[in-house]
Amino acid sequence: MNQLKDAGSLIHSGNSTRYPFVAQDRVNSLFGHQIHCVLRLVGFVDMELLVQAYRVTLDIEPVLGCRLAEENQEWFWERRADLDMLNGVSIHETDDVETQLKAFICAPSDARVDPLISIRVFRSTYDLICVKCNHACCDAGGVKDYISLLSSTYNHLSSSPNSPPTVPNKGRRDQGIVFDQLGYHNLLEAWDASEAQPIAKWAFPFDPSTEQKLWTSAYRFQPESYRSFQTFNRLHGVSFNDLLLTAYYRALFSITRSYGAGSMPLPVTMDLRQHLPNGKAKAICNLSSSMNIEIEVLEHEPFLDTLMKVNRQTKKAKNPRLGVNGMVTLETLAALNYEELKKTFHMSMEEGIKSKKSNPILSNVGIISDQPIFFSDVEVIDAYIAGPIMMPPGFLLLISSYNQNLTLSTGYDASSVKEEHVELLLRTMASELILAVS
Image (tube, one colour):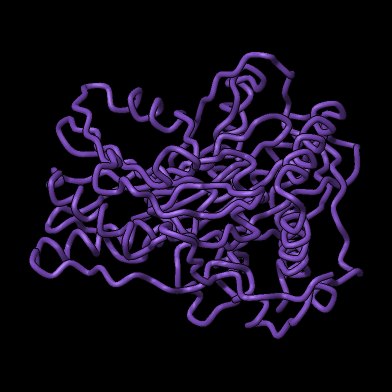
């Protein structure tokens, strides 16, 4: 395996400015995924100011103002020459916000052509802002960082319009910052061969289809439920993640009728920023890995019994090098020629469809912001993150919260995955959680 190197440096080439297409960017780009953050305001945003703030953020975080480009079979981020003409912010006045919002979330985006970040304001009796972020340039942690940057830039321009904050961020965006922090100098040293690698044993139900209908579903808990969950967690000495993972496991076992089939693996995404000082990266980027949980749920098993199984597994999985093997795997894959990487990806997808096995994933991205988000004096009173739309055989449930509003969301191909099955999953999870804390 190769030595680790600094992949965060600016690349100068002729008249264009380029940035490295780092390992996590390369792998995430294969899926064509988008991540969305939805913000509900109590009033209305100043559109002119929002457009200005958006444009400034693309200079503060230079990669966000790039497009994916290729030259001589080498791929990289290249600064766009049309940034001042880019239509990255739009407004739609509508009486049917939810329908229009869903259409925007389900609209695909091409990192080679479209803006990596785009914003749509849905205006009715209030403004609802949806920020679309291409997963090739950032994960959910990066989306949260961008929301903070966008609102703070907007507020800065509102109070000091003549001094925009345009100093470019030169922070590294590659996994090397985590390897360095943990003291690893090469991939062999970082790899732990004793760490079990999960085998695909099950999948969320799907029937392959030649058609495609991108769709999203969500379930939202009110603050009183959120507070009940917090009280329950303190009483039983478990984490919020344990509670949510337990409900997810129980709902999946019920829907797939996997009782008696033994233990089933479930990857849980994790934010690698937890390994960095103050839990923060210095640039907006992709910096995620996963931990693997594997338990069996028995039919008619009490919720608390499942919860204790999950709690024991998560405690066992958590260690100072959590997520490192996943990082090594991504670096190894990313070392392939990009066309070879695409072939490997498509072969993996085809195998999953043929075997009908691809372990469902849980991504609990946590609180969007610890503090209330403001655009000048207009407060964001509600927010959630809508995760990427997964194509079969994959399935991912994303969980986020803001202002004690908890949201379960998932995106899927409704021509292959039945909407009724997804809605049943969400309702079953909600019922499990509400009954457990009652």
